[in-house]
Length: 438
Image 1 (spheres, rainbow, N blue to C red):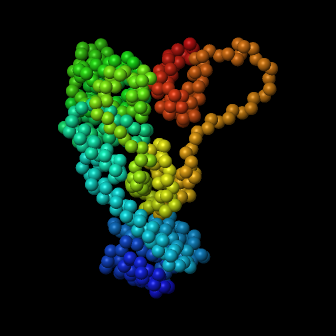
Image 2 (cartoon, rainbow, N blue to C red):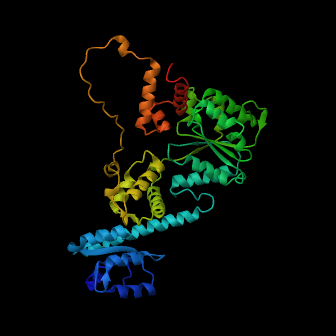
Image 3 (cartoon, rainbow, N blue to C red):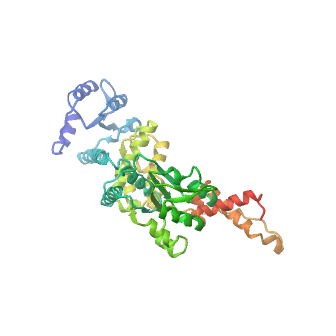
């Protein structure tokens, strides 16, 4: 059969070496580097399945494609679970073999592109993954911003890497040796946020000499916006019960909203907007980043496989096509979560389309639907007193139901309720302090 397979590949752009046993394969591999091994399961001197483990134990392990007859198909599937990238069921023709090899070579190129891109970004942007024109523009802007000390306003959808961009600006600036302090303005009620920002051990003081990153700045309550405006203008603030404090810090803020619209709606002070919006940096959504989806997928697959000891080495052609055609409304964070879930729950040589969530296979964006309440028995009409509840009770139930539907994620619940997270936190705290009575 080896002569037939060599004939299939005679006009293909591959250098082929054919051997008939595991022992001969060991000798050939010791004498020359090999990119792909076409491995039969049944060999005269051993089980090809066991040889998969041996091949993958080498530092520069080749990709393995298993060849199997119909009767041993289960063994081929097991080989893929152990780390083979694909398998072919015999008999097969030249076209099927070439398609499999071409796909494997494409996966190898993807890994090399990712490695090259990572090396190119090894100084300055080592945490970013992507070399699309949109991201190249981001990198250039970050380099320019790092040389300045101007306030930066990072805008972009959730999951696009706004904090990562802010950190890259800091790490490449003259302030890199000082602190990079992060404060999420939408993650706590206003009184706690005031202390977290301007308290004796708050973020403003901790960022002295370094960079203060204010995420979701459009969620700030009006009083805190006034204090922040003074801080941005003069670099001073009054902590609780303390004298005026002077600090030297660079301000970088971010939002997933349209800040100018927030100004027009009156939720963001116009004077604060212009103080913060000195230099804008837009983080592109993943749907605008083209081939970066493949690089990101390869990055996260390799990372999570390494962390969990799984054998994943690539993606099937169908799986990669599904990843690349999906619009990714949750952006890089959503892609990361999908790959992490696959690696945690599965183990194979490659990610197949069947391993992807259903919405990725269909291309439909999942929509959350409320759970229907069970039908209530027919009862006599209640009185007005029984129907009408105090407004705070209706509001409390709506907030609690939203938080429960979001598995305790207050920020996500606030988004569904179309209010600021700080509003939800403030109401929860007020109900707790009043013992659920208003």
